[in-house]
Length: 453
Ligand code: SF4
Image (cartoon, rainbow, N blue to C red; front, side, top):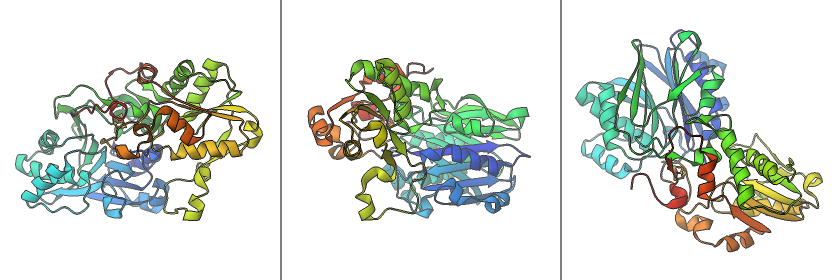
């Protein structure tokens, strides 16, 4: 399972907005590592710099120094829609009667065929082929008709379906808006000394630039920031809240707070609850880095079994241009994870991981731990079984490829080669995130009940 995307925006005349956005995108790098981009508005024009690669591969001192202006939008991408070519990197540049604007999107639209057909009918050319381009072209078209970008965005929100947390900048104004279910997170922050405003997918993006968390961008809301200040309006009436519950399990950074619920605390609670739901006789609790570690600490505290750092992660193997060869691939996940034989040798290990999609990673993990000398491997997963694909920005596979949709628990356990296997219940996961201020989750990958259907 891969992350979706991260979006960021700054309105701060007089500040180095491009540099701030670069730091913000680095804080959101875990949400997408295939491309990065920043669009800067200086009051008269927009300049966009984007490329494939990590934020630090795309931007350097020279490129940041060239991006002068007073507002930005930025994006890190994982290609859930349309592939990973350069044209698909964001922010996406479009224009309203020759006046440019830039759009960055986290999420996935679900009615792309309908939108494409509509734009075809209007003879509006499409280049990138992404759902984000469809949204940008639709906003441009509707803004031409209404003569107000905010109205164009509101009318586009009536037409587009699916998950979207978007930021848009013109040369002189920053906009942020979110789908009426609030599926993907989006927050507003304020810079110290009233220097300006920041929009970020997660609160960790606010923290890195010293911005104070103000509030979530509300589902269905359109925020506009310009020289007149900040203004809120309703783009679409909010629907029953359906925030992605998987953000707490895996996607979000542990130091982020979503809807009042700290992600690290939620992961610890997942482990604690899992220890009561599915105890194991063992000598050590290990966490699969990164998201499995706080959950493993929770499991250890609740069970009384000591926690150990028995699996080390190589932090610098990301989704870069340097792909392993087939021969290297056969070495398995050791590129990313390496067990410590001195810690786990001869021990009965409870291993805490966040999710099982196809099951290949779990199978390799068990084999790797056994090869390192583990006497027993008891897999404990801090999410329920993934039985359905996600259509909202996560690249889970088709049902046929989801192991839990095709095998019983016993069959999965045997296939992975584990001594035992258990998943957190949905009730347990809900309890772990009970600190949220606006309860109401998308849980569709576990239940098949999608917010829009
Ligand atoms: S289907 Fe699953 S991963 Fe996708 S938005 Fe819903 S809860 Fe999140």
